[in-house]
Each structure stands twice: as structure tokens, then as C-alpha cells.
Image 1 (cartoon, rainbow, N blue to C red):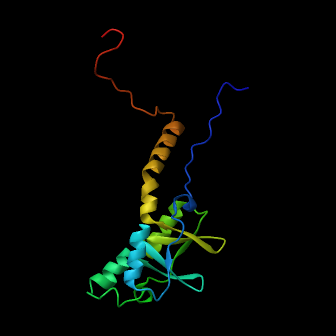
Image 2 (image 1 turned 135 degrees about the vertical axis):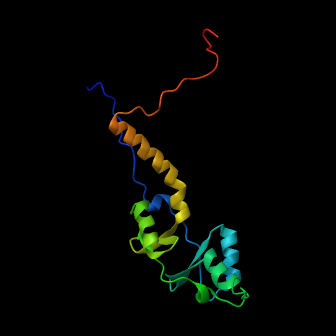
Image 3 (image 1 turned 90 degrees about the horizontal axis):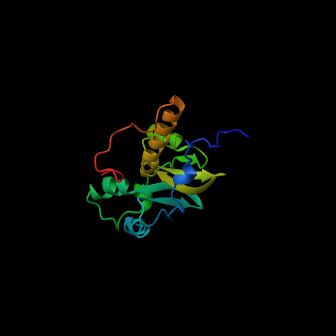
Length: 167
């Protein structure tokens, strides 16, 4: 047996399914913006997926409500989800890496993607979800770089204070 202890490789991949939000909060196209906003607040989410015949046809986000209702001084009880929803809903497979999700968001200029598994909508991933795990990814990559280059993981430094042994 080798004197080197087995050490699993550092994990550098994070999949969409690991950071997505699920279940998807949804509404119907004829629900008012008041109803949609109420669902957002009750569920503590920033978007509601709009479904028709069990298929997502659009998404209403907090940004949609601000840009398309509030700034135009329109009564939210007079508008339906179908009047302000963003469409089409851009999707990503649950097994894709979050870096691909970020690229897709940038490509389409959106902050949220529907997450599908075998053609079924199973969640939503937002730019905030990706940013939440980014610091840990930087730490992992930094540590892996140190290991691969043979550098110490920490820069040696002197401690100030009293020694327990000699005071």
C-alpha cells in the first residue's frame, strides 16, 4: 500500500440542479398583478412562472412589475399576468454547469432561467443563486491552484502575543 493517503479530487463543478429553486411557483395568464405580487410575497420569490395547459408560456418578475406597471402608473388590479409577462421563457437542463447558466443568461439578457429535466420544468435558477455559490467556487479554484503549483496554501506569517510555554 502506498504511503500517500487517498485524497479525492477537489470538486470544481456545480450543477444547475444543485442551486436552483424548486418547486416552481406558478400562476395562470389571467391572474391579476395584485394576485401575482401576493404569491411572490407569500412564497418569498422574485418571479412567478405563467402556465397554460401545463406548459410554461411566460414569466413575471419583480422587474416586470416595476417597469411595466409601477413606472407607468397603471393599477395592478387592472392588468393580468399575460399583459406584462416576459416571453419566451429561456430554459436550461438541470445537469448543466452553473457557468453555462450564466452564459445563457448573458446571451439572452435575462436574470432567470427555467430548469428542465427530461423536458419537464423542475425549477428556476437566478443570477442571485449563481452569485451565492461563487465565493466558494473561487476558494476551491484557489486551493486547487495552490496544490497543483506546489505552493503552500497559506502564506507563513508571524503571530504576535504571548507564548503559552514560555510567556
